[in-house]
Image (tube, one colour):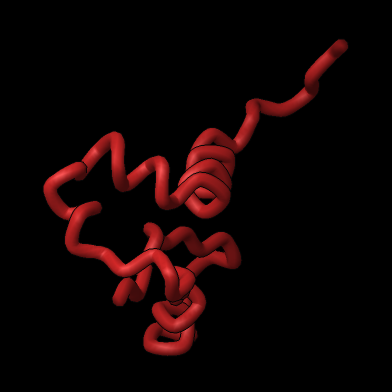
Length: 70
């Protein structure tokens, strides 16, 4: 397979976090994992950050994951 562009590792990593969030939290923050009620699905709110800062100098905007937990 020939790739012409570099992979977007930031986006790929964020996709992994979203898809496997419960496992991600258990691995990286087991002390915090025990406090979360996973009967309620986590809400990913990074789009809310874009609403707070609608204008940017360039078209490409990145944000980290923002997750609401119960």
